[in-house]
Length: 49
Image (tube, rainbow, N blue to C red; front, side, top):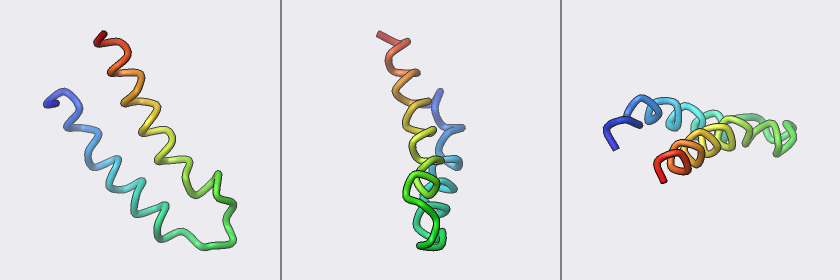
């Protein structure tokens, strides 16, 4: 997991953005940073297999 340590601050920021964004923003926009972080992690683990 040390190789993904750099992603931890990005994940924290994405979570804060998602939770603190205004409610008038569409859900897709609010969750986009979290979805991108998830995509990076899934891709990384897929490449490890």
